[in-house]
Length: 294
Ligand SMILES: Cc1cc2nc3c(=O)[nH]c(=O)nc-3n(C[C@H](O)[C@H](O)[C@H](O)COP(=O)(O)OP(=O)(O)OC[C@H]3O[C@@H](n4cnc5c(N)ncnc54)[C@H](O)[C@@H]3O)c2cc1C
Image 1 (cartoon, rainbow, N blue to C red):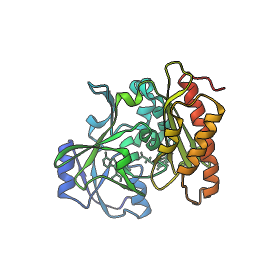
Image 2 (tube, protein in one colour):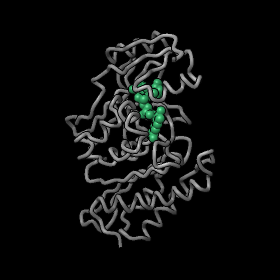
Image 3 (tube, helix red, strand yellow):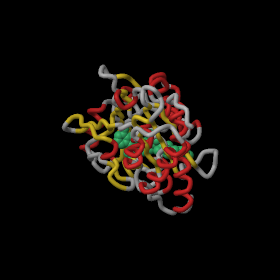
Image 4 (spheres, rainbow, N blue to C red):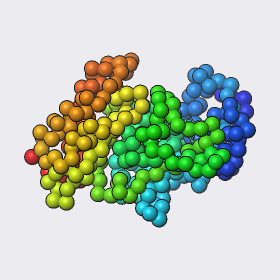
């Protein structure tokens, strides 16, 4: 049995916002794969819930007229792994979603929940961050858009007002067109496990495919929130496709990461694997973009 005080069900985004205002103590539940665990463990025992599970308009992926990819907040991981628009434009996000939990969790867990829980190990977060994704939030005063870099404001804390829900994650066309990427998750077990660390890289090569025009990289568990490594990104501009470039990338990553020791892994171990993940992700992204590393 779950210890739940009240359960409210929203039938529209507006109703969800109204319920948020009327019951500020109540917690949003979407897929429930985090929330129900917290209720069962006692952390959220006795809470009230506002369910947005029925808001089908917030499920699925579409293209806005300007080419912006709109990923509904309630889109499940299973959906992401097979969505034609995601596979065509950002296959690395399908790759990341496919690394979440097991099939049951991928069927029920949502991408919005994965970001709104504010967890640094969230498998889709680093890839979304590495694509300059913006959160679309809806509240009493209407819609606002917040870049994910500003959405994460501290360990398990996100920039979501008491009256708001996340409706979508948005990725602009200039961010995904002509880019190829790679996500690597390192976890203690190959089977269902939270990431000890996750690394997502994407690159755009110069038209002759001889050098890196632009690279973006984000880590999960390199700090309290998913984090972009802007210094390493800057260092890659115009660099040739060589092993020296890959090593230079790792050197810059080293000064950007600051993982902690936890029961899953020590800080030193995390640093070692994060450097290697960065090298492998960059190599693979270059190859997927059509480059040859010499
Ligand atoms: C067995 C198991 C294995 C797991 N493995 C992984 C894994 O490998 N990788 C991984 O990243 N995660 C994993 N998770 C965690 C979880 O499945 C994900 O974080 C999932 O994305 C959460 O989505 P949800 O819809 O179930 O969220 P919920 O549990 O419904 O909500 C999560 C949080 O987000 C808030 N929220 C949800 N949607 C919205 C919204 N639209 N607007 C505002 N707030 C919202 C809720 O209030 C809550 O705080 C695992 C969980 C379990 C139980």
